[in-house]
Length: 560
RNA sequence: UGGGGAAUCGUUCAAUGGUAGGACGCCGGACUCUGACUCCGUUAAUCAAGGUUCGAAUCCUUGUUCCCCAGCCA
Image (cartoon, rainbow, N blue to C red; front, top):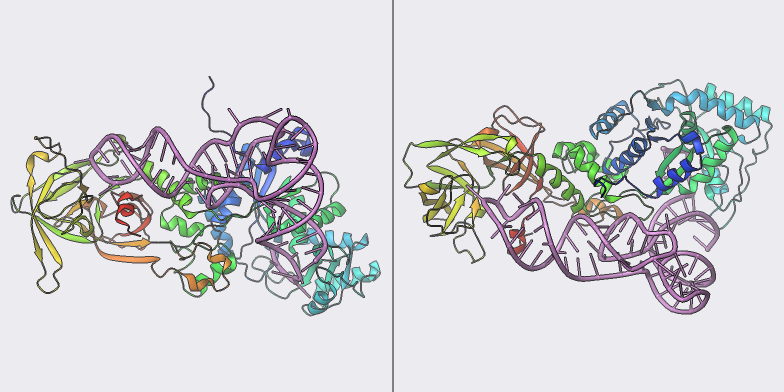
């Protein structure tokens, strides 16, 4: 017998790494990097990449760098850098002193470009953007060579230096790789390596007016950092020949290898930066950290835990198939984690008053309730009980069916952590006919124990003492979009779920929750997991519903 | 249309010529002072057609479908 162990993660990328290790590549080193561009907040799709890159580094005793891929000043900012640092750290990963910026390599990259010119592998082109596009050809027709393709090395060197010096207007020249205008792979048709762009960079300010393109900067940044496995998403597959071409001409010996995997798609949300930015800019959500957003910061505010997100990333696996992961898997991971950790509490979302007629007026008592049914070590808390309570409106039905286990006229139900009550009469609003109050009697014997006569009372409902309960606000979240794959729709805004946020302002939570600390999660019994929102003001907590509990009654009743 | 990728239960990942398996979901049941948790059970797939082989998801052939590429974005 062997000890049960959690199996080491395995996927096609790790297979490649292990094959390489066995073949003695990279001197047995494994070095990865997570290379976001700081032009937006990272989301659950990035989290997949973070877990992959850092996870591999940990598994093979290697390193994973955090590198900001900031080669296009338009849209990049320190705010985004800070958010990325905060989010990756929160996810639970550590890059130690290896925080890098592509912009720190600008001088070295420039030198590499000069070298490429000197070896005849790059040239300055005077074609404008339209002309470049026209001469690039199409999928079926080869491109035409630029008239500037065979400039002398000296002339190229001279103009490139003057590009850097700021002598030319934006777009007047580009530096292009001299590869093959007839290549069936369009990426290889003399791609642009540098462009002139007078835009202040959030880090280098006005130091540069030329900026390297992704294809040039990324592979060389990898090489400079000694990356062994450059893991990226599938859409860069066409760029791999260019990656190898550039590195092959500038870097001797041990070179990084690019491996592509399928990016994550999640049902009922969008995961493209462009679309996320649109949601924020056009105020369809309340910011990057809106709890409905699939951003890491949004999920954190919502109450998801790093452990749950990491578990999710491990569960979905890594492959090259296009995928659309069902959001219910994410929710499952969140519940699984929170079920273990979250202390239990009671909160009534839509209150209905209950008066216990045979309970002494002005009386009251304090019940000691377990914080976690499976973990007694989490202790107990005092919960006041009194003659007047609130219960959930849903927990009473005037004409219940046989399958309904809760309160109805003449029916008995157990109050969670307390006693059994029986509904004796109901009070209705004369005009609307709405039930506004229940009069019940309680069975004192059942406080803390089963009924003496052994009768079965299957229903258990939560409650809050009317006198002691804390008024709280609760925000209920549902999926942001009403269709599975809004990302595939051009006009995705049209499919926003109008019911994605419901704010409940007349809820009552048990008194122990009065001073709940922002960011902590609870399970409101029978309802779901809730997290204290930063909007919480002193004495007036605001709770976000992280995820509801599974609800088999809802299925029976056909709700939702 | 040229090039590059991918096709396995509803979803997703695995099986690396030798019993198609796991997770989530669905459905059913047990338990229960949370209609939660837990436990048990069930359902259900190799894109198609040929071929090679004792044996094919895996190899070969032909076809089909889907994704990516024609930014001085990444």
